Amino acid sequence: MADRRTKMNGKQKAAILMIALGTDVSANVFKHLTEQEIEDLTLEISNARKVDSDMKKQVIEEFFQTAMAQEYISQGGIGYAKQILEKALGAQQANDVIQRLTSTLQVRPFDFMRKSDPQQILNFIQNEHPQTIALILSYLDPDQAATVLSALPVENQADIARRIAQMDRTSPEIISQVERVLEKKVSSSSVNQDYTQTGGIASIVNVLNGVDRTTEKNILEQLEEHDSDLAEEIKKRMFVFEDIVVLDDRAIQRVIRESENEDLILAMRTASEEVKELLFHNMSERMAASFKEEMEYMGPVRLHDVEEAQTRIVNTIRKLEDAGEIVIARGKGDDVIV
Image (cartoon, rainbow, N blue to C red; front, top):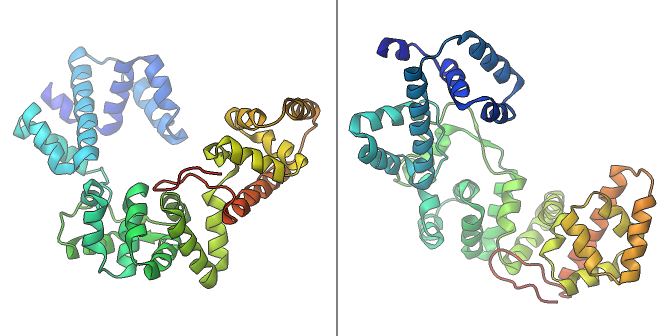
């Protein structure tokens, strides 16, 4: 049996696991696979004409150990996972599980810093080059990165935000070099040689959504001076129409008054039920009934027109906030006060 197990490759093990889990679970797994993966796995399953109970047990056990190891790594890194597995499985089996994982698992760079307090991170990186700081912040959790960015010198914030937004791909060698310079455990030792997606506009938007309003305004104003297109693209992504749910009732009522009825009706065409109910709740009964009737009998509309209407309403929200007439709830500070 031992010889038979050692000859199984990953696809064969996956096929046996699907057989062991049954058709319902396997069907759900298949929903998350590519067409090629489904084809390969289906072929392996069809070739596995007879799978004995010992083989099923061995594959399920290996899968369970691997899944638990990945969970432990996400909680506290490879070292933590190894300690837990050694207590549960013994040193030899724990080593086998970790070795299996590290041959394919990509541990996110700067994993150790995501376990640290933002103030400690700030103390550790504040004297580094802005590009180094940008690289590190792009890998942190958005809340952590927002706290650190807010605490950095005001004159450096926009520069670092711009570097994060314009960051695309960073080679593993540079990432590892930065980690070595910081004299910390290299968490990307198993990163393959493909370039790793880093930063980008989505990354800085997540960070800015968590900073206080003063920091956000300072960064965007400075970005507008140096790169107005980038600043505008960031603004577009920072608050979308569906985010209207973070406003309180009085703020929503103000937005409704300041917006064109036609825009509101169009914008609600693709809105979630939560957004629709929130808007209806803040209208008069007569207005809500009129909107519902018009939406019911409205013919087909272009998605582009809907998106433009939503953009106009979002711009209204921005103007009201800039004028201090409403306040949008943010990650680290402002209450929603109108």
